Length: 216
Image 1 (cartoon, rainbow, N blue to C red):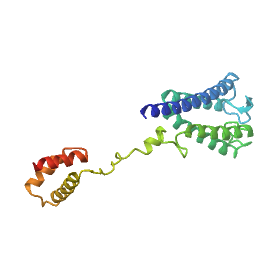
Image 2 (image 1 turned 90 degrees about the vertical axis):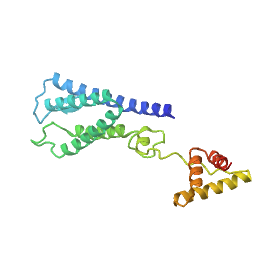
Image 3 (image 1 turned 90 degrees about the horizontal axis):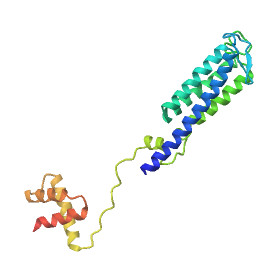
Image 4 (image 1 turned 60 degrees about the horizontal axis):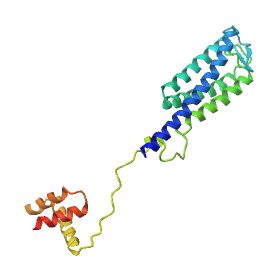
């Protein structure tokens, strides 16, 4: 089971880390091309870069976000998953917010409608990638994140032992009555000693044998 848990955890880590790196590298390419073209940092008109509109400010932001994603992937799968979800939400909010300022002086990132569509689609993909195998429903029992949120309780209580020997049945009944007397502080010293001796055994059969041995 531990091996299965580690393999499941490693596979999810790989998905989250590789996805974060790929998105980060894509943002780096977009940002580097913008800087190479020496785009005006604060123009609201923008210049086409890979089919999207960009300015110097958007290029720098792309480089920073790409670096954050890659750094998160280097840190580990859990960090990559969390950061990817956060960046995905930021992309969606950016798309929704910038669609309101298109063709206005407030359009500081030089967005155009293709940028808005890209932000919404990329945000949804990042959200799905970060949540994959972690926040989605119907996770298997061996999923590491499911196991952390649903820790196993105490070990299952074994079924009562069935005694075939009539003497063992009588001894088990006597032991149960003596344990009840001890719990009610009504047991005799002999009963208390025999119950204490029987409790040192783990299995029910062994406790009954210890109780019978105490009578001899």
